[in-house]
Image (tube, rainbow, N blue to C red; front, side):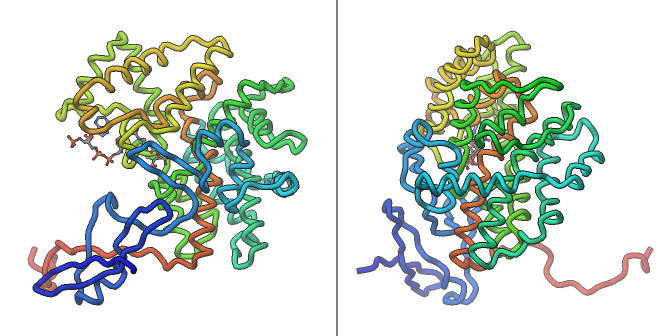
Amino acid sequence: MSKIASLEINGEKYEFPVIEGTENETAINIKTLRGATKGVITIDPGFKNTGSCQSAITYLDGEQGILRYRGYSIEDLAEKASFLETSYLLIFGELPSKKELETFETDIKSKYPTPDGLVKILEGFPKESHPMGILGSLTCALNAFFPECNQTNTENEVYNAITTALGQFPTLVSLALRKTQNLTQLTSDPKLGYVENIAQLLFKKEGEAYEQNQIINDALDKLLILHADHEQNCSASTVRIIGSSHASLFASLTGGINALWGPLHGGANQAVIEMLENIVNDGGDSKKYMEKAKDKQDSFRLMGFGHRVYKNFDPRARIVKKTADEVLNDLGVKDPTLDIAKALEKEALEDPYFVDRKLYPNVDFYSGIIYRAMGIPTDMFTVLFALGRLPGWIAQWKEMRTNKEPIGRPRQIYTGEKHREFVSSTVNS
Ligand code: SDX
């Protein structure tokens, strides 16, 4: 028998159906609320208690610290899958066969060439532009250079837009990096594997052949998998709501990039390293900064700590922390910010302020330390987060369009002026 929830308001009683997910999550379906109650709505700043959709892509259990893509644990995927395999899984729902993966990779590589006109846009950007601003602009510009991708009404049209996005994005990331580093532009190399190509786009030095480094490729592949999706986070929800107006995939992805840029979201990985560098430069006194983070009069926050959903360790943070140790050791890099990060983590896990609020390290706390060890500039960290999150955004957009979800249009409670007659203020003066 299906469950119901009842609500009493203004002396009237109303009943609403309850829906349950495959992991026994429960929601009250209030889609008839406003009509039935002649205008009553709910309000939930930040949507802390409100679901926007039913989704089969990613499952999080914030209390247990569980993350699964299409039912596979993040631990298994990070250890055993490739980023391209994981991208296929997120987007199409199943792990690909060898043949399916080969075809997927071939189709993506066929979309590698970036139009000269799109590269020319870079000339207008000041050198000191933030790479996320460049990435967002170039992603939106894809609409102009691949107009056929604005049509996504058939399976083939959707597949074409998806493989174009996955084919163009690594080059756009490289264009953003090399513009801000004053380096000559590079193109994607279809002879290389997907992540090997990303590595050469990021690390190839001027006038030198690029020698692949397996340590870096393995770490990059793992980091991209760890960032690939995270259910209805701020940027994924932005992609879904833009896509719900039937704006193109590239327009929706542009919104996701801009939402991710914020320091409370994906921009945190850059903010973490800047915070750790400040602490190192200020003498390395982690206790002083713990006190600042707890002081409500101080705007300082312990970046990379806390999470809307995880009230336990972010499972990705565990993997990234372990990978950071391995990569720095393998590359022979000594980084004082890693020691400070570990000291802050140890103190926070024993401090009632953090323990009571269930504030643990999140995916952004250690990831920047690995990117730094690879020689990636700090302002590129969120761009790499976007590169990893691309397949997740695509999967969320595709699911929303496949499910023919209605245009997202929240209601509000008006708190402004009541009606007043217009009297021109210029006439009186
Ligand atoms: C990502 O949603 C996702 O899934 C995102 C993400 C993904 O993969 O897409 O996981 C990626 O964005 C990770 C989060 C990266 N952001 C940061 O690391 C920035 C620092 N953290 C926060 O600003 C904060 O924890 C948020 C934004 C992540 C979550 O904020 P919430 O859920 O709105 O919680 P809150 O701000 O209401 O905090 C609850 C309490 C408050 O104290 P009280 O009012 O109860 O006294 O905890 C405090 C906050 O002041 N608090 C912190 C803190 N985070 C929360 N205090 C000090 N330092 C912090 N980092």
